[in-house]
Length: 321
Image (cartoon, rainbow, N blue to C red; front, side, top):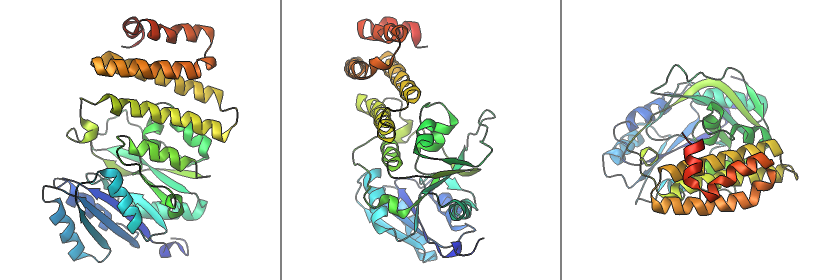
């Protein structure tokens, strides 16, 4: 390891809630890190299982572990508590049912030392990793515009890597004036949007050092989502259009246009799969987006997407599979 890096303290923040099945494995993977100068902040958010006791056992084992027990307040408030407690030069977030490779922190600290980036992020793997999930294979330097380009297509691998908080290490000063907004379903997406307003350089390291679990019982695994849940996703996209315009007065037309098209398609999908309340909310949101951004569309595209405002059912039948 290069000189000086061993002195940098990393604050690892893990929000904990009813995670007894995987929590010990998660914590163990953190404590086995080859880079040892870190503090682990475990915030038990009113767990009703043995998660709190698991946290306390690790607190007894290692002085680097800090534990807080609080009444249930949600992920945003829990992460904010961790940020308030953090003493490190850098910040990492890890979800309580995931785990990391032994060189997770060391890889970050070395890359940060070499590049002086605001954020270093790694590739990710799922415990249900499919053969089609091909890892990216090279170090990539990104400016804010480059980061936004990774947030265009929700089904791309780049999107998944960029949009989450938990596969990254951040300079602490990023969070000086930033905190998670309480009550948001997509708090990761909104925080990433806000972070992109503050950074200049992001480095991607092509190692699958973060492994996440797909938990069908978690809030992100629920099949029946509210209209607010889905429309927040669209709001996060609209926020990225605003960021693009802030970075470039004229915006990146191709980038903005691609986002607008995805918004239209996502809204149509929500309409197709939704109940009456969802459909009414979608129609209202669709009309707002069309009025704001239809000037970017060609005449042919205008005709296509305007069809939804006239006959949502016909549009979905024609374009949404």
